[in-house]
Length: 201
Image (cartoon, rainbow, N blue to C red; front, side):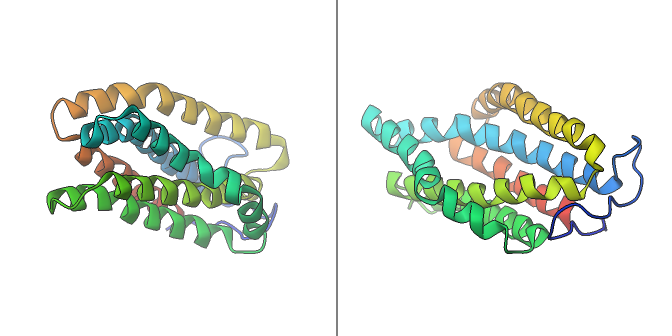
């Protein structure tokens, strides 16, 4: 089990990792985020496919996109301020686990023949809202994992991981959707959030 991420600003950097200045806790955090980013990229590809499968409507595709981005407009500033007042590690673990449950609802509803486009909208809205809190906590937690001199390098590695996931996620999703129903792809993202939560525990 890794040393918990402190709930405040810069502090102990944890045990030395394989790279000078980078703690073992940072590398666990980085690995968890890399897996989660890949899963989220799969969902980004799968969501419009699922909406079109359910409705065949371009309007519904637009509404799904709106449901994804509306939380950033409604809650971005409020959640960002709130995150500064809570334990960041616990918040990230909680949001990861709730994200996993939220996304797993799609294949479960599909298996029960209860999935509707409105359920997809709700999942997209809830997932984006949780992402705001998680992203804010992650951004604030990084300085507690690395020395100040390595902060730019750490942020660069995390950004590179996000870029790599954005590139590799769609081809992976395309391969998977040729093998399994599109609803099943959301289990990939759900599992990635469980991995991310485990890396923080």
